[in-house]
Structures are given as C-alpha cells and as structure tokens.
Image (spheres, rainbow, N blue to C red):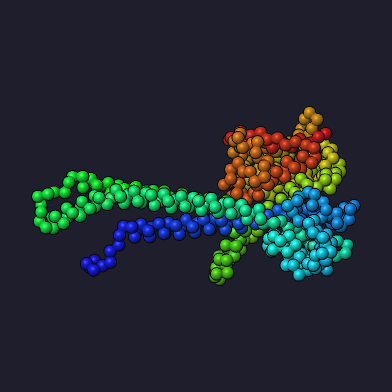
Length: 469
C-alpha cells in the first residue's frame, strides 16, 4: 500500500463496528415487533371469527332470543365488555349495536367487511371508528335469516395489542441499548489496554530504524502482543456468541410464529415467480399447498367442533338415540380399515353381545375414529390394534390398544390439552392438528363419560372410553 494511503484510527473502526451492530440489532428489533403485531392481530381475528360463527350458527338453528334482534347485542354487552357486536340487515341498516345507538349510526353497506359478508364471504379489516374514537379490528360473517342475508359483525379495540407491542418494543430497545453500551465499554477497555504496548512497540521500531540496537524491546512487549491477540480472540469469541444468540433468538421466534399460512404464501410466491413453468415443481408445490390447506381446514374444523362442544347447550349439541355400540364400532373399523391396511395393521374388534347405548351417533363415531386413527398412526407396520368392549362398574368400557412406542408417564396428564404433543416432531410429521384428543375428551364429557390412558414406553398404549350404563 502506498505511503499516501489514507489511515484510520482504531476509534474510527470502533465507531463503524458499533454502527453495524446497532443497525443489525435495530433491524432485528423492528422485525420481531412487526411479526408480533401480525401474530396478535391474526389471533384476535380468529377469535372474533369463531365467536361470530358460534352466534350465527345458534341463530340460524334456533332463531333470535326471546328479547328479539336487539337481544343479540345486549347479551354480548353483558358477556364481554371488550367486544363490540353489531347486527346489520341486507340493506346496510344497523339493527343493534352493543356500544352505540343504532339510530344514530350511518348506513354500513359500504363498509368493506360488511360488503364481503353480504356477498356470503367472511370479511375483516382494521379501521378507525368515529363512533368509539379508536382503532378497531372488525370481522363480519354472513347470517342467513328468513329475510335474506344479514351480517353479524364483531369488533375489538387494538389498544390492548398496541400497548403490549409497545411494551415488547421498549424491552427489546432496552436490551439493544444495553448491548450497545456493553460493546462500547468492552471496546474502550481493550483500546486502553492495547494502546500503551503498541506505543512502546512503535518507539522500539523507531529506535531500530535509527540503528539503536542497544535497547531491545522489553520482554513484556512480546507478551503484550500475545495478550493483544488473545484479547482480539476473546472479542471475536464474544461477538460470535452474541451473533449465535441473535440467530437462535430470531429462529425461535420465527419457528413459533410459523403457520400453514406462511407455507402456503411462500410456495404460492414461488410459483408466481416462475416455478409454475416446471411441471414437476408445479405439481409438487401445488401438492404442498393443498396439504397445508387441508391442515388449515382440519384445524379450523376441529376448533369449531371444540367451540360448539364447549359453548353450546347440551340440547343443541347432542342428538341422542338408542344404538348398538357394536354396530357403531364395526362402522368405525370399516372407516379406518384402508389406513390400517396401508401399514399392514390388523384391526381386531371384540364385541360379542349387543350393548345398547343412548348416545349421539355422529359424535361418538368421531371420538372412536380419532382414537383408532391415532393408534394406527403411532403403530409400527405389521402390528395389531385391538378394540375391546367389556363391562365395568357403572360403565361400559371400550379399550383401544396399540403396539406402538408408548407414552412417557410425565406426558399422560396433559395429553388431552389443546395442541399438546408428547412428541412434537413426530406428531407434526404424521399430520395431526393437535386437537384430536381434546375433541375426544369433550365428546365423552358431554355423554357424561370418562377417558382413561394407560401406557408404558416400548409396550404400547391403551385409550379407554367409559360410557355410563
């Protein structure tokens, strides 16, 4: 390098390094805050949709409450003060609102979410409400009535989400600031430790240049050079550790926020960007999108089933009649037979004498099919899944037993929780929604029954449904 090349102080390099670290940390902070915002808004949107769908299903099946149309909004006002409910007719006229006077509200037919719902499609949007002087998240669903299609709109203020996000951002900013201060203090300390030895080495080099060989560089100077190298290695190690922590943090957050929707979006964008021109890629990506769509649909269906089982009165949930339990189980075995045959699993049913039960045929079949399909999923090929009916004290017991890997004891008490997975990686690979056992428990509960599990690692598992006699 030429003698006239521009030279920079260590402080200049230090400032550049801090600026880069600052830019990276601020970028990560912004990205995480933005992902959190999308996640919370999506959660609220799903919650509002499920709530609205539950009410519309109730109205479509049983009609409006005794208090009339206005009673729909009045009941919501007492049930959840943070939620706003609005009922709008086919002409956009507000019939009732849980927080405002309908007569003072303008026609809502031009609201985007209302317009979508009038067309039979669930609509949503975020908009500032002049009525409440606040930003709201709206979700509108169609309501089929004798007078045509009306709209049931739910809304909730985003103030709580904004406050939570601000708190998250403040904490992330505080951590970022602390990291910057820590980097500054460490760098300043190292600079002060490095500068004197470098100055001594420079003076010694000048003396050598002048031919003053009598005064050798002190021995500590070689030691200081070694310490300098060690200090740089130490700094490099610390920066590497910080980078690993940053990467792990972003990966963990991204993993937790990842949903089938992001997968669908990613493959759709890939197709748009040119992958559709390759027939093999097109078929493969469309297959993945279809699989993820099916998973989304399955999760939504299971959530709606759980919502109905938990919130609706038993008289609306159950359609009870007398059936032969053996006939129900034979039908369940037929439903699961093809899946079992693909793994060469033998499905054996032991139900010798007719057993009369007073149950909801469809729901009870769903519970048994869930248990049998789970047993097939987790069983090795060429094994056996047995379904045995036997009497118990005050109950009829139905045992579904597999020869799979079994379940560790600490997982058993939580198996029926929503989205709980004893083996997360394997459960997701097998395609479950994480809601099947929760649905089984609720179905059995509404039949006044019980569910039991017995298992040992390496010796299979037995899921038992006990129906009252």
